[in-house]
Picture (cartoon, rainbow over the protein chains, first blue to last red):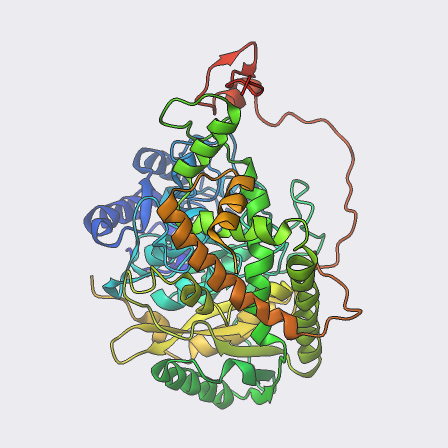
Amino acid sequence: MIELTLAQAAEGLRKKEFSSLELTKSVLERMKSLDSQVHAYVETCEDEALKQAEAADASLKEDSSVLHGIPVGLKDIFNTKGVRTTCCSNIIKDFVPPYDASVVSKLRDAGMVMVGKTNMDEFACGSSTEHSCFGVTKNPWDLDRVAGGSSGGSAAAVAADMAYYSLGTDTGGSIRQPASLCGVVGLKVTYGRVSRSGVTSMASSWDTIGPFTKTVEDAALVLKEIAGHDRRDSTTPKVDVPDYTKNLGQSIQGLKVGLPKEYFGEGIDPEVRKVLDEAISQLKSLGAEVKEVSLPSTKYAVAVYYVAMPAELSANLARFDGIRYGSKPKGDVEDMIDYYFQARSEGFGDEIKRRIMIGTYVLSAGYYDAYYKKAQQVRTLIIQDFNKVFEEVDVLATPVSPIPAFKIGEKADDPLSMYLADVFTIPSSCAGVPAISIPCGFTNQQLPVGLQIIGPQFEEGKILQVASAYEQSTEWHKQRPQL
Amino acid sequence: MLSNEEVQHIAKLARLGLKEEETKKFAKQLNDILDYVKLLEEVDTKDVPLTSQVTGLENVSREDNVERFCEKDELLGCTELPVERDQIRVKPVITEN
């Protein structure tokens, strides 16, 4: 039962082939037997999940949400009322939120069964889930390797059949990169498509929320349920939420797919490149018109990101002072200033401290123009690149990560080299456009590789269409890790 | 290049206390990162507008209706510090030192 897709599980519930309670028990069983190896979850919610499943069985109707009674794992950055929410940081390690994030309320109304909270890099800062105060998540395809990050737990949970779907957040690649490294589907939505209310902010002008699923169809189903305007998040525009499943199964004959030449240059692992080339041939054989295009400002995107993101992060994390919530300092303190220093020094990990310091520096008097203002200007140029290229083509096809999953600890002492691995996901985050990572093959060592499809703002339907056409013509998404 | 003293100063502004060996380690890493982002200097941004909001929303407003969000006690229940008369008791803000 655990290997079913979300759509299959929802159908099985309606046909009474099994109950939500049975689905939930099978996932909890799987978590018990496997998660000591994978460590996708930092909190298991067994009792609550069983109760939610019983309630879901009792209230299932023909027109219930497709998510009704389906076990889900949520990244530990989503506030969940009454369930500990830590952002995998010591500074709020015992925080139990008194309210749900808007997207969690939506799932609850849909009949959510939450089996647990998933592991992540502290405050979503990282590309490997190594910066979690609970320890690293292992890649289900090779337990010596990282699952990617920051939403590594959410990706690994779906890859290892420990959830039918999960939610994560993507600021510079934190859904797409782990999806690619774990061989699952990961969707980063248009900025503002899904409400961020009640989800701890990392970099507010970049943060997005999206699903990890086993198929493109499942991603379309989840998106329909979580997208839309929310008065608690003023950055969610009043743009209609279409039925994304209408785009599935449609031909991509004649559709124009751009290959940005800046994404296919040096620095890509040759095996990843080979898999990508085959995936692009497949798009051609499906009738897509593939042509080379250029996004000339691409090489500046990582630099823009590592100025603007820490600036926003340092401001957002200023609220964590161990007073209204979060951990108080361990030792005795004299006065308030001492309290702040101790609470924050003990509470934040090294990666957070690094980024807070970069942010503090680039925003400080005398440096603002040279760094922050400059970055916001170059961000405009990157957006203009995308606007221009989408006059020529419908979508872009690119790699997600230049390398497959790397060994745990391999990049731990070299933050910059970790940052540079986000080179293909950051530009689309700069422009706020949607992008999806779908499985498109394996390296010689059986490590998954993802294909990224990028579209114009609010054109999630278009990228789902291309992703679905590709997926339905290949078997990659059916492969499962041996665990 | 940021000196160790500058790193200490930035850490102080950010309310982070650093040990001496941490300062050295961070100084190197921060300088690597700042060196890298200098790449932006080569871009001509004369007359290029700034972007802080990518979907073009501006001055979003809504009806100013009061609604109940969380109960007072639920919110005060989040602190580890003592609560008196609906207020969190903290250490002295102003001291003789």
